[in-house]
Length: 234
Image 1 (cartoon, rainbow, N blue to C red):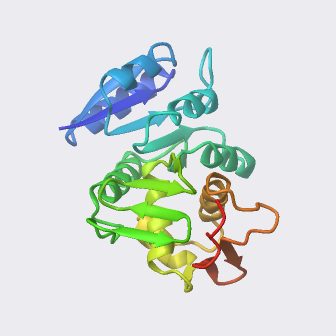
Image 2: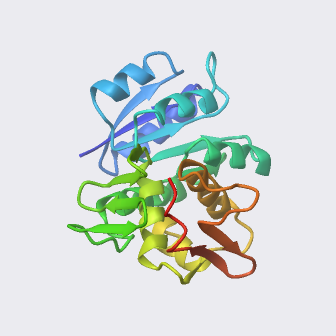
């Protein structure tokens, strides 16, 4: 049974989500705020965390930022904040998905399953057991570790899968359609900016220039391009 932590201060909504998810095979731990969340995740790593943004005490954005220092599993925001700006912030902080309330339980369940399938390797076609090397960049698929110029780079599971997808297709444009289908588990609607936000976050960690990226380039109207010969410097 998958372990899920739900942080939601709306008691009625939390009870409904809890009941629905438990009836679909999840063991749900409910928290009304972020008190004790960090310690709980550290002591027993859940399969997925669902966070509201507007919480008493520390908000979901702050909690996400803290979790991403050590938790690499799927993290999903479920919130009434529906502005694009809020979604961008959530994704930049390391969330894997962002759903806006009110959300149909079946839609929420589908999003959760998509994230978990990717984690288990059923979406991203990532081979294991060998290392990709590009100059000073080393990607060890077996241990899911990344090293750049002798420095270990801490990536979330989603960021690692994104990097592998781009690196496996080095010197080839990876379309947003492919990225959404293989990493996010849903079709690209032509408007969703989450792929760009995720690539931007990955660039920062890999010391790419955010204003003028030279390692992972955006090819406007087409997708993203991993430059295989741009990794000689750390």
